[in-house]
Length: 263
Image 1: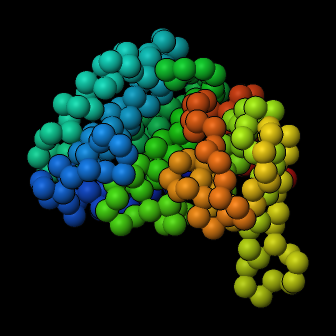
Image 2: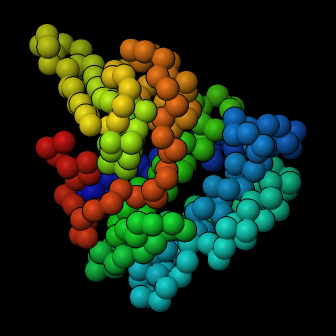
């Protein structure tokens, strides 16, 4: 499969898991606090729905060449989330499902030539349109775990973990971070030769200790979804996550694979 087919398949599965979780909630559940400070579960679901529509806007921009902002303004984004959060659970779930369907149709109708078009989030850097489904996959996986209803970072798919750790490190503020080095050790599959585990090291990150752990535990810490459980030390607070909506310098054309096959 191409990188677009890979990530569309991952996104479809991720969306279905979230919808299944949401469908099991009741009106009382969605009024309960989520794991995000100040937000109920209803806020999180409303955010994911409006986020899907925001990516439809970006793909419209890519397809037509007419600048179509992801959100009209930050205030409008917050108002839409607040208005959606207080609805009955059935309306929230229907909204979530329909927004996901609208985004899938937008992805389906985007011609190959439009995936290289440059679009922009609410903050820089701009990025090629092929990265939109990957941004959406991140939103669905992370916010599914933010519901606090049983699905957590330990449940994130391995393919998602590998990709988002890679891209989180591409976006690291090199030389200005609170640690000097991050070492990701991915356990070898059962039956593999001794010493065949995959190791990835990022250096020159800043001043501070070296942090070592499995990719999943590292990503949970980097995204602020854990305090560093399972890592070699209790690490300091990481830099703000998603300070960049996409890594700088992405290739204009959809690559054969992402992360690149040799990384």
